[in-house]
Every structure is written in structure tokens, then in C-alpha cells.
Image (cartoon, rainbow, N blue to C red; front, side):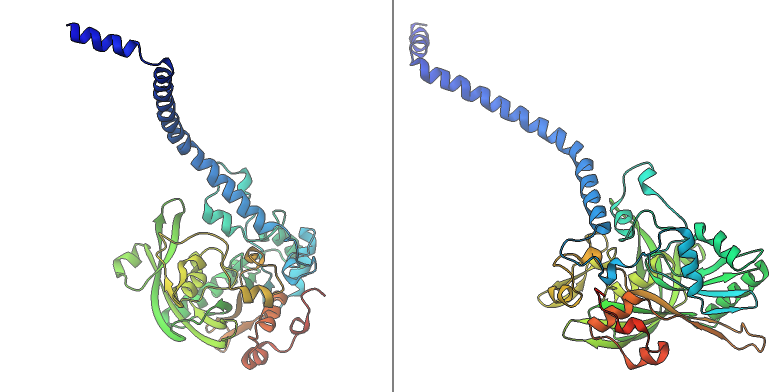
Length: 404
């Protein structure tokens, strides 16, 4: 007992400063542990905020005018229309066919079918939705707003869209002035599918050399869920007929060949024929072949370069961010470094073949020349082919200056 008292007395008579340091240190450790637990709780709350902040940054970059680039750069002249009326007048000026109620126009890049405003929608933007917004201004008109104006211009009692390329691509758009004609056109597409003859031909500028360089095959496209991104399209080389009948996969007959390849800048001018364009099939297919479409900010992240060799990344691990481009492309395209969000998706629906549409049962083949920015990019990257000039002729677009 006396021993215990001696130890106690000894502790009580220790230097007060040492005792205070011990107490302060212990209290500090408690505070640190408490702060650590608190930060873990707050970190979870900050995730959604940081995601929203990142998506807002990407969205602003996609639609802003990049400093260091001329205001008259060809990529900044994609949307010259100030109203739906001006857009309607422009669309009519692109007419490539008008006979017996069938009208074919050359749809500009960035014009969608339906006006959607995600800013007023409930819930946060997903990264896929953010990047799919492209670089268009938020006030651009959609075809649903322009169609009534075109109906007046053509003095038609009925006018509907039968076929069109997706918003972030350019090319042919078919209009019909009667439901009966619409059914006839749709029957032509079904006939082409039954005969295994792709009805649509696209031109695409891609980053890299496709592998294989030429192919004609049948694959399928399907949707798979990816965490934090939702359902995304992927290519399926193998699929069952039961899955196709249940609409879980969509079989597609696809062909592609290279029209021109420039090794210096590692870009290609590609011709792609397909029966289907649903679920961004053309863009997903180009990426699947190791050569993403130039300006495709949705799926280009699935291709990476490792030790000079291109590899495919799983769609579960792919980064959803503006396309990563080689430095030489920024120079060739007269753009500041790391400004790939300015580059539009270079995909153009150039030809549609309507099987046995004519009275003599021959095919009706409709063609539309690529837009100004597409032709300028071809020129800058040395991708103008003799075949392209033969198909579309020499237009003023071939001679434009990016800052004229």
C-alpha cells in the first residue's frame, strides 16, 4: 500500500509542464480522430457536389468561345441562324430532291429532332448527357419547331420526317407529304435489311487507322448499364436470336473502307455503310475499330495508346471526357492546345439508297455533300480523296479559310 502511495505521490509531483503536454496531446488526438470521422461523413456529401461542379465545367467548355481562337473560325460558324425562320429557310436551300411528295434536305450539324432542356429537368446531369450536349448553343431550334415553317414554305397539307441522321452529325433528312408515302419509304428500308444491303452510307473523319482497314460483317449493338453513366451502347460480336427477338440486342450489317489515310497526322477518311444508326452505332463502331470519330466526346475514351499501340478499354472503365487529341491536330486545325471540345463530330450521312422505290423498281439513290466544316477539316488534314471529289464535286467549301 505504501508502495502505491509513493508512486501516486511521485506522479503528482512531476513537472507540471510535462503533465500539461500529455493532456494537450491526448486532447489533440481526440480532436483529430473526431475530425477524421467528420470528414468521412462530409466527403460522401461532397461527391455529388463535385460531380455537378465537374459537369458544369465540362458543359461550359463545350459551349464557350475558346480564348486564342478567332471568332470567325469555321468551327464557330456552325450555328449562324438567329431564329427558327432563318433555320427553315436554310434547310429549304439545302434541298437535294423534291418529287412526288418526297423531299430530301441536307441537315446541318447540331440540329436535333426534339427540343430538350436538361436545365429544367429534375435530377443532376449524368456525364453522358453532359458530353452528349455537344458544343451547340442552348437556344438553337429543333426540327419540331422548324417543321411547321417548312410545311408552310412547301404549301403542304402534311409534312413529317421519315429518316434523319442524329443531332451531332450532318447529312440527309427525308421528309414525306403523306402517310402513304412514309410507309413506302419505310418499306424500302425493310427491303434493304431483308436483302442484307445497307441503305445508308456515311463519311467520317477518324483519329487513327481503323483495324481492320476494310470489313463487311454482321454484329449487334446492345445497351449495358455502367455505374454513374447509365446505359451505354456496346458492340456485341456474338448474340443469340432469342436476344434479338426480345430486342435486347439489335443486329447490324456493317461495312467500312478507308478512302484516305494521312500517316503524318494519323487520321483517316472513312466510308461506313450500315442498316442501323440507332444508339450511336456509327460512333461506337468506329471506336470499336480503334479509330474514334474526330469530335466524338462520348466514346473516344474507350481507345487508349499504350507503348505506341492502341488498345480498347472496357466501357466500364472508360473516361467520359472531351476527346484527347494529338498536339499536331490542334496545330493543323488552327486551335489552341487542349481545346478538343471545340471540334464537332465529323460524321456525315452522305447517301441513302431506297430499294425499288422508283416505278420501274430501280433504286432511288440520294446524295448530299458534306458541310463546310467537314470539307475544311479534310483539307487541313490532307484527307481529300479523288473519290470524294468525284462523288460530291468541287464546292466552295473546299476553298474556304478557317478565319475568312
